[in-house]
Length: 86
Image (cartoon, rainbow, N blue to C red):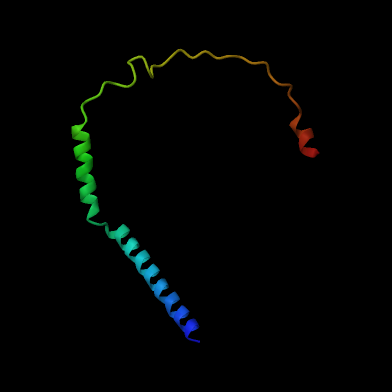
């Protein structure tokens, strides 16, 4: 009898702790936490410490080219109305 009662109490304690952890995580996601300000300062340090790099793509990349249409032989046309009846 005491094992069952102890197991039941232990289960409810774990359930309350899990609900509390989820609630705290939910509230932090809504209202934010103090960690965001430290992330922003890290990002500014990283971007300012990186030297300017050369362009990755050359000047010729991404230019427009002349369009040339390629004609392909047409497939034999079937009467679509006959196919719908089947």
